[in-house]
Image (tube, rainbow, N blue to C red; front, side, top):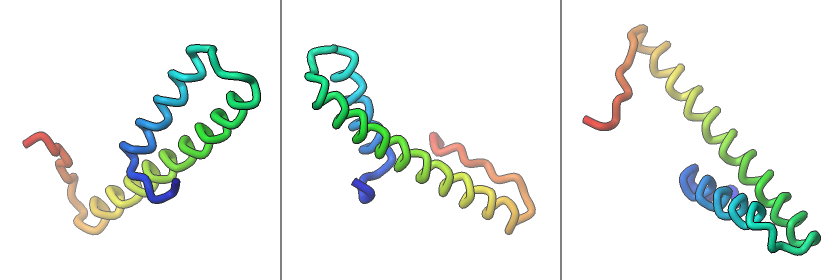
Length: 72
C-alpha cells in the first residue's frame, strides 16, 4: 500500500468509509476495513508532511515566497 499516490490512497480511504457508513459490513470485516483505513490515513499524512517539508525547503533555499498555484 505504501507505493500508492496520495490521490489513490485518499480514493481507497473514501471507498472504505462509504462501505463502513453503509453498515452492511460484518463486524470482523469492518475491523479489517478500519485497520486498512488507518494505514491509508498514515500514508496520506506522511505524504502531506513530506510535501510540506519540500515546499518549506524550496522557500527557505530561495529566501523568497514561492507561488505554488498549479492552475495556471
